[in-house]
Length: 252
Image 1: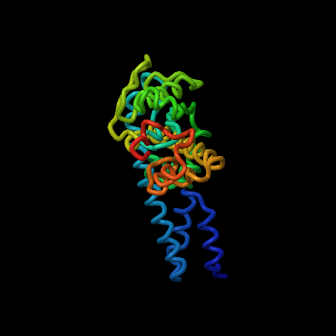
Image 2: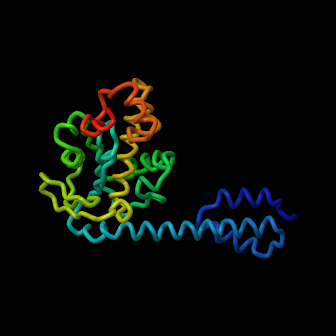
Image 3: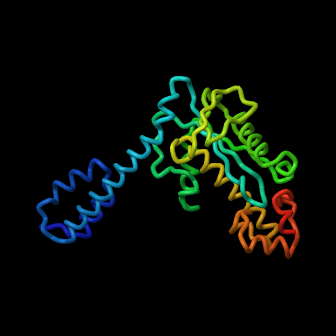
């Protein structure tokens, strides 16, 4: 008796990558449009998956290059540009055989996708930490020095000491570890991309907490960046305790 298309659909949906090839062969002669449509759909899915794995392989080029030196750690930050809130740095050491599908520069990902990837990174990483420097300190030492400080914090908190740091375009002063600055590193290195995601997610969560106590500024939506609504709120309510005074003087 011929299987219903709904049954075949369930088979495809629950099949692993290797099993799919068997299903393609099994139903290749089935002339029903619904079945041929399923085969076409899942073949496209496998092609997409293969391209993603190729992309991830390329993103591990620097990790492969420096692995001989020991643990390779990616470093990135979130929050250099906002008018309010901290700057947050992430430091992530991934295992050599690590595969985290769809991991990319945090700016290329939706908030929902970042949250999912954050959990996977924290689960799979050899070590992962963040450093946080608040707005008062940013005003005191400037945003560049505050970013370096957040990065040093993140590295020094790691449970495993790295031998190489892959940085997104910067060289961090005050660290006696080999550093490799990479222009647009969050799009070229898997470790830096992972660091960018944990930094961004950590900072966004902090801004949502600030929004609970200071809802008039809308921190949950703009995360402290200089949107028109945010600038209007600063003019209306004045600066909050988490605003960077050195960033907002033009609006007051």
